[in-house]
Length: 597
Image 1 (cartoon, one colour):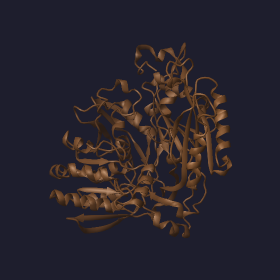
Image 2 (cartoon, helix red, strand yellow):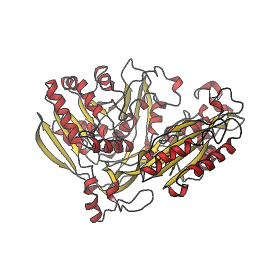
Image 3 (tube, rainbow, N blue to C red):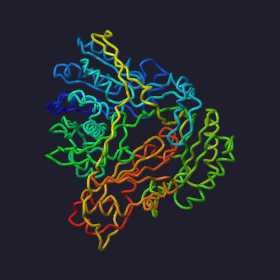
Image 4 (cartoon, rainbow, N blue to C red):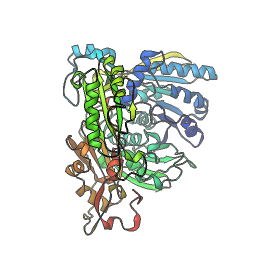
């Protein structure tokens, strides 16, 4: 039986802490260093960068980090696996070879490609693969407008690269969990149909993929966590059966607890069946145990064969946008907004109907009897979008400017952006057999091998048994009106144009109450902004959690959203601030989190 493999994370997004790689390599023992650089928005950013300059298609900060740790990793036998290759894994690998030569090192560098479908869209459409939009069901008809189109690859190209002796593996759009699952599958020699082990590794990868979000970052109960001014990054020690222990290096800030792990488990998920290219990991089978200070064991995870299709993430340039915010201060906020809107359209060279999109709203951030100038301010916000950059340019600015002395008292602009491009995201499906992975291995900077790895998973028939629920009764008795966040934590985020909102509690009685109380209708009443949207509710009683999928909240995706929080990161903290009636028995003893709020 092989020993567990310790896989450490040093990046949760493109732009994360630059020193994290050094910290993870030097501050404690690890076997593999990984990092996640990609998101749907990142692919759009890389596409624009690639169009402007050579070498713009991959995460350059990853190369910088490798310059800092490459020698140490080779000395210690630490493998490196990352999806920082983005839209140009070959270019990223070549940049690593240049760094190695400059440092006098000779690592074996491999890259995995095959995910980039942009140049194949016409061919795929001609073959009848229409990449129907997962939201609207509409087939793809205009491929020329897209700047990126990438299938989500699984872990087996990474496994092959490691089998061929790669010290460093870079991929394109592999799934976030694949860069953890791949090293685990390679180390333990798992078969492609070892569903439970693969599912366990995927869950471990999901926990550590966003870096410090597993060690206290973005955690609802952050006031309980020590060292939050400099949180350490996490690692996952994965055993041969796929179970894992989540931890962090000693003497680093933050904390690994059932709470921090549960919170991250809820990040950007959908149903309890967590779909992936290698396995479906059933989040309703997860068991968590605290096995020591800053150590949480994740076990019992069950897996199912994955679907026959891979998800494809696509970005198109949607046109140009202008975002305007005008202060509405003090009294008569609604009347001031009405006047500003009427006067703006009178002054604007184009009517609202002339723009492809014109969205206005009042944001009530003002308070009654304000004690500061800022507390007296609400906003009238306008977002204009059009394919013609000139229409959302100088004319809009001029129309806003001429209102300054001619309309409402207290006029000033809160924001007035210049015309800027925005992207539109869509997702579709492609049969896995059409997306083989190509593994290219470079030794001493020269081509050593090219290998094709099929993306098609074996078939199987698996019966999953979700964890049994607690028999604790729903609490009754007197209630007290408090913020929901007194007993519930949250984690929310974006899924294309949709948003997920996960909530968790920390004992069985609180779970029984939350499960009975927070229905879809209740959610609509607590968050009026989502009242008219389609909402799905998914229960995860084994980890005392639930997840809501709110369809369409982010419109055409993060880059196109007109919400103040276009990634829905704060959605969970909003609902935690809402006042609800909670059984007083759940608040006794102060065990349910901070009491401020």
